[in-house]
Length: 286
Image (cartoon, rainbow, N blue to C red; front, side):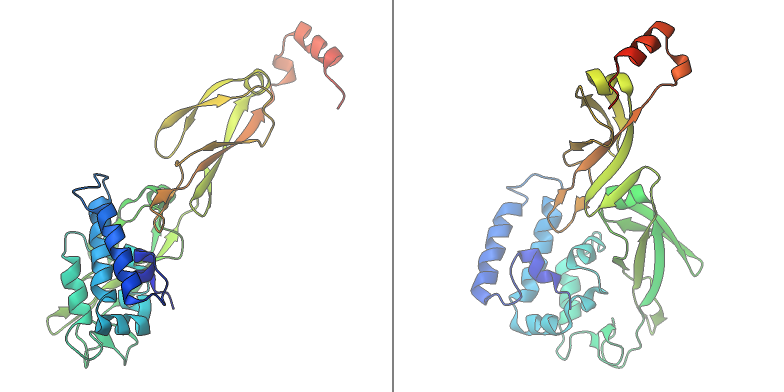
């Protein structure tokens, strides 16, 4: 059973209360918005605080240890936190874990239900196909369900088979509304292959640049770059472009982009006759 709250704080599931507190304090100092000015620091800080809110409370921790990430619709805690938008994450988690009993866990249906005991499971499941570049870069993707159209926030680096929980888009009952659990399918790309958080792209390199070196322009998912090609480049040789891959959400860093050389051989009939004769005479047999 996946239990990503422990991953959020970087501790094992068997960590003591003291170890959990030390990990929290270390991460809170690192990502505090007054200290860390990176764009994602504030969201990370909120996520760390919310995780500690649960794991530092014996009752809440006991419930989470029993049910794990099923309480977040089966998705990991990072994705669940990102889906809350401007909502107060601490308040949401208190409503899920508070109130005694199983804190919103409906044993009859085996998953989180906004109404607690006696309520039907109001969550709905659906599939969503996301374009490759949106899965890598993140962004918004439109969803149509039961006549309703709305945008879904897609976290950068999401993988095929992961799930997203969209709040208040499920079934309604007595003034309560469940959530929508989206199973993600990522479209294939004609230009890229993905291996974890790394990307691979085949690029054409003129024979002259491969033999003698040069520079070529390459379009990436982020921006156009100038690649320096070394003399003697071989076919299928790879060039590494650091942090131009997909986001690894667990580690908080991007993977790399590997550019695979496809050396273009010119048509023989387009070559100068003298050059062609020279090549025929001078090129090695093997």
